[in-house]
Length: 333
Ligand code: GDD
Ligand code: MG
Image (tube, rainbow, N blue to C red; front, side):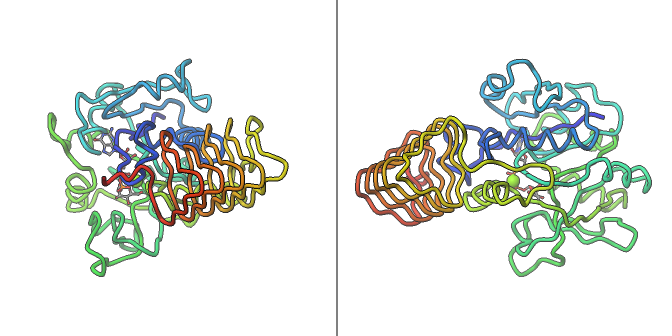
């Protein structure tokens, strides 16, 4: 079975990390998010992946030069301009000639869902579309779903105003779809699957949902991206785990790395402390610097102190500077 992976968003909420790197190419542990997504699809019986891109395919093509990711053959569908989620599904499915049941995944979701079980449920219920659902504490940040006792979706509301949610079950971003869904998507304009297509299917009672309580996380915000890394380190994932320090990182013997992921080629100087943090490949932390609850892709000067900060790959934090809750460079400036 084939899967369309949506990777065309701008990753706005993760800026400045996504200034030069598409969100799905950021590492979780020592592999990219997209590799984690495709590995999970492969475990669930997916044999080919179509990457649906709204812009800039180059970083993906460069990362997977032999046309495979996690052992799965990849093809690319590059929209002439971003078509939003349903437009992207339609464009990719047409480009790949999909004419049978297929899977769609949001390319920024890390989860342990059993895709084969989702497909089996889809077939047994005779659904036109089946959504993977998960329970969360802040449903208004997601697509909120109300299910009836037989698994039929009764309501789908994308990002309702806080306090107006009618359920804590949300769209977890993995779908099993029949090709008839493609015919529901108007051609040649932006179409949101969450705001336009799912509500139509709800009205026709052809949209089903299956809730699971396995590991699930949308990596699209800094604190969640950080958590995805630390969860992998802490062994919270079913199939994957990562070492704290990549073999190609250089950590001074007098530095302290506590509950953190240090990527390939990262450098940590004498006496530095890195705690509850992620250093991306190529990051550097100067002598005596303190980095806590932060994500660093660029360079932190000696004796600087960071708490809950995000430092982009082209940024340098000056020596001795103390920052709390900052993004460097500031994406809103
Ligand atoms: N190809 C393409 N073209 N992909 C796109 C486009 C586009 O125009 N717009 C967004 N995407 C991709 C993003 O790259 C991402 O992988 C996926 O579609 C979802 O977009 P996000 O921007 O991450 O959406 P969200 O996280 O706010 O909400 C979505 O995911 C939630 C679960 O994590 C929705 O599907 C919610 O209903 C859902 O609960
Ligand atoms: Mg998202």
